Amino acid sequence: MATVRVIVNFSKSARYAFNALVGALDSHISDPRLSICAARRRQDLPELLRENLSDFTVVLWSFYSPGFEAASCHLNEVKTLIDRDDIIHVAGGVHASAEPLQTLRAGFDYVVIGEGEQVLVELVQRLLAQQSLQDLQGLAYLENGNMQRRGRGPLIDLNDYPPFSPRYHMFGAIEITRGCVYACRFCQTPYVSKARFRHRSIENIVEYARRMRKEGFKDYRFITPTSLSYGAVGEEVNLDAIENLLSGVRLAVGHDARVFFGTFPSEIRPEHVSRDALELIKKYADNDNLIIGGQSGSQNVLDLSKRGHSVQAIVSAVELCVAEGFLPNVDFLFGLPGESERDVEATQALITTLIDKGAKIHCHTFMPLPGTPFQREAAGDVDEKSSQFIYRLESSGKAYGKWKKHAETAHRLVQLRDNRIE
Image (tube, rainbow, N blue to C red):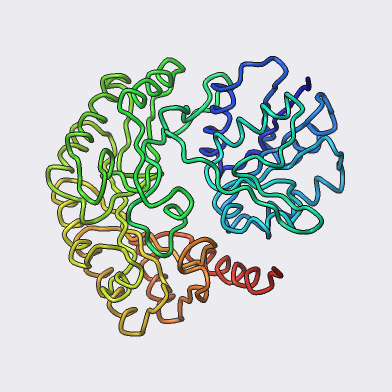
């Protein structure tokens, strides 16, 4: 029998994933031979690895596609300093799932493809029992330079796994829904977690909200691809489920706590916005703003992206939000595939209209993310005219966002894609 130490190589962008993974280990493995710790600063990881306190050390890495290069460089630095056979670097997340060979060739020992909770639990159990990992479902690895993969990780029932780990004080937003039926062509979510909804039960959500309250937390947020889809099977809105969710959480945490719904780290689809839905949010939540996924002012571009809503739905959503006292922050993606000069003009015209109606604009640039139908498209391009348009909005406080950084990242992703050797 062996001892295992799991080190979470913590990053801000992956904090919710790490909360869930540590929660999975803590809730499913009760064994004193397992220890868990976190490297929260860049210099912490080599220091923790030098301690060599167990038979096996598993380092957990998780990153989005824009963070792949930085993670690879960090891994190389660490392995240059400390490279032992008992240290196992395991990468997961949307990029590793979509590009396992690229990730393995960067130096990671194993890649978890798909959802990681069940895979990680079994991986650690096998190491504790000194059993082989080679046939573990959901893992990929290199053997004589060739990738061996054992399918995708099993789709989990959210109720079987906690959203965070109270024992290790790794708390955060509660994941209430995984997967997305809309399958927008630029988004990685439905292609990693499948294009269907899986919801955490209200009882389960309320229980974890109570645990956070006992720990002294007063702010509560939710992770979901689309907030007003909670309790839904398809594209319908289930207001009864949403009211039961919000009222249950409010009762559990008290009226001196703050509940946020339809804002970071989630959003609302424009066609889901209704007066009744907004009244529910006003009744139980504390946020005075909402994030609305608009993406484009061109119906042609929306259709090419398979967004599943109209331009008019965006306008109506903004009007309803403002009428009910909410500030709508509307997401727009510049440089989407198929966008013509006329489409760009339509987007700018819509943005101007929405600002006049009381909205604020959140600006992004399209990135051809691995694992999506748009992964082979060109990097998003924001031409000089569009850039000046955005600058003017930003200078007046009507727009914000990291669109310039996104454009740089998009071009780098294309370089990595086109230089890849299969």
